[in-house]
Image (cartoon, rainbow, N blue to C red; front, side):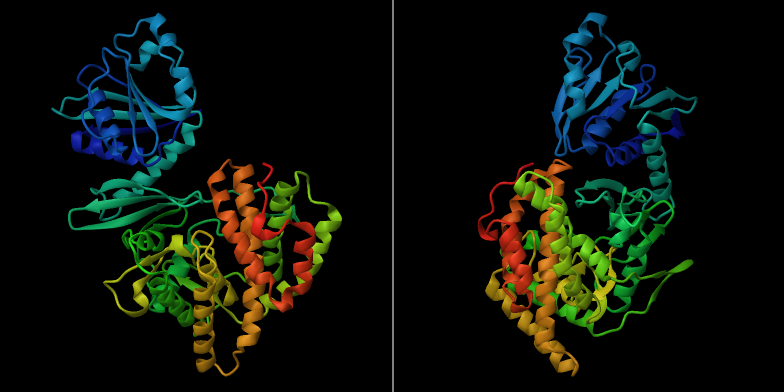
Length: 508
C-alpha cells in the first residue's frame, strides 16, 4: 500500500518550500529516496532539505565519497549519492547500522537494488518543457503512506492561509504528540500546530481508556473553544488565525520565545513572573464559566467537569507506575485498595468545591512573559486544550509547585496568601482555611500523578530525562501531606513509600 502526491511546474522556490515542509515531519530512521535524470534537481532538493534541517555551511555532492554525514540540531543526517556505486560497495558503507539513528537522503536509489527499506518516502523528479521547472511525485511506502497523506494535508492547509509563501521553521514541541512550526514572512510570523486526533488507548476501567476517564482532549476542538473564552476574558491566549478541526491543524498567534524557564535563565526574578501569573488565576476565578463555549462555524463545545473519578484515576498513576518502580514488583491489591479508600472521599469533596475554569497545565513550560504588554496581558498562556470545569486550587498548585522549576517554600506561601487575601476581599463566601485544605489535597493528588507519569515515561517510553524532576516533585508532595487534613493519607505514604526526601533510584 502506498500514497502519492504529484506536483507540477515546481521551480526552485517551490522545491525549497517542499523541503521546508518535509523537514518539519522527519525523524530518525526515515529514508528519503530521490530519483530522476541528471539536471532534474535531486542535489538541489537534498541541499534545501539539509539546510532546513539546520545543517550549516557547504554541502558538497557525495558523488565520489558516496556518503556524507551531517550533524543537524535534531539528529544525524546521511546524504548518499549512489550514481557511481558498485554493488560490492553497498555493504562496505555500513548504512544498515546507521539507518535507525539518522535521516538518510539517497540520490540515485535505483542503483541500490533491493537494499532500500520498505518504509520510505520516494521523491521522483523530472524536467518539463518549461525551463527551470520540474514535475515532482512523492510516494509513501509502508509507514510513510499515512505520513505522506498527513504531510499533503498539512501543506494544503498552509496554502489556504495568508502564510502560504512563508518560510517554515521547526519548533521543539512538548511531551505530547503535537508538533509545531514557526511560519515566517518578512513582516510577521505565526505558529503552525499539527495535532492529529489521538486514538483511544486500551480500556483500563469501565470499558474506558485513560484519556476518556480523565477527560483529555482528543482533538483541537477544546483548544479553539477555550482559547476563544480566554481571549473574551481579556487574557493573552494566542489568537487563532485559521483552523481545521477535522484534520487537527491550527494557525495561531506567535507570542515569541520568552517562556518562563528561558526568562528565569536570563535573570528575571521568580516572583516577578509568578506574581502576575497568580493575578491571571484570580481573574479566572472571578467569572463563572458558561457550560457551552462557542466555536465559529461549528457546534459549541461543552467543558467537561474535573470530577472525582478523573482525579482518582490520575492519582492512581502512583500505584500503577511509581510504586512498582520503587519496589520492583506490581502493587499489591490490598495496598491499592487502601489507597483508593483514602483518596476517594477527599477527591469527592475537592471536586465539588470552588469550581471555575481550570487550565490544568498552568506551569512554566506553558507560560510566557510578554513585558511589552500591560496588566493581565503580560502572561501569555500557551496550553489549555485539556481545560476543565473544576476546583480553582488546582491551577494555583500547578503554578506554585512547578514540577520543572524549584519554587521556594517561602515564595509559595507568600503567593498563596496573596491569592487568598484577594479572593477573600472580593467574595464573602470564600474561606482561606477551606481553600488551604483544597490546595493541599489537590497538591498531593497532582504530585502523586506526576510521580506516576514520570515513572511511566521513563519505563514505558524510555524518556529517562524526567527522572531528574522526581526529587523536586517528592518535596512538593511532602509539603502537601504535612497538612493536618491529610493525616490518614500521610500514614499510607509513610507506610508504603520510602521517605520522600530521600527516594532510592527507581527499578525500571
